[in-house]
Image (cartoon, rainbow, N blue to C red; front, side):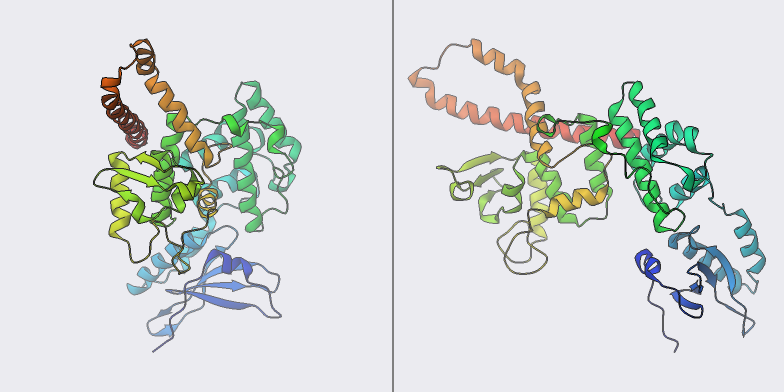
Length: 400
């Protein structure tokens, strides 16, 4: 029985080095990549027809065709072979339809069709909008290697002149990611956006960064659609809903939660304070925690390390997960979740707070009642915030 090929990855393909003679590496289902002595890599299709091995059919240059697209073409050709039809003529027509990507406009289309294919619809839409509105009209007709940092700066300055510094920075980042992709595929040798500092385009004070409702929706939808581990998705969602500090959440233990009472008690010893901190949980957070509890194996931590041992994930894990997503929210750090929640909750409750300030002082006889009312107010504020978050997640799904 023939040995099955181990499927390749993009990183493995990029790492293939030329040898004294050209050689092929199989991906499976007839698809192979041939590495030439010059370093050029070409997709080929290996097949037999009527019981006889046929010459390799050329699919195309790796720089022009992603692994995903090459597999799709190999599958199409395999189906033709199964019907007794040679795929050579079809492969030749397919190659003729492939763009040479020697100018930026064509390269951008290749980028959108391959690299962006696995991204969320929202991510693809914001990327294409930046390219179509500002990048391609300015430099789309230029050769890839002719674009300079001055061209990038000029695009950003035009966007800033419209009063949109955040969009200018976003557009610079789109160009930077596009060129990183072209460099990986050996279609470019340098990145003109790399030498344009972000601070020269737009600066933000992270200590006052508050996300809008729309940005919250964008982030959580992108997190939900991503390929990161399910527990990390839930952890990021809980950060938003509970308004907790990242360190408090990642080190949380199951014995701190009373899900029936919808509360989380963070011990004073863990907070380095004199008393415990009570966190009221909205029903959305309780549902997330019950899911995590249902999937729980052993151990004390809500978010255990995948490296074994009864220990939590590292504090940097959530930062790395967010960074890997390439989210379309500028100048964002995880602590912005907490500041954002506080700002929105203040706005939602300012009317009630104003009314409370005009009320008469509580008497000693009603002090206990006031304590209960205060707890009820806290629970109501937490639930209002959670509903606000969920509404923006859902509104984006309906309009997306």
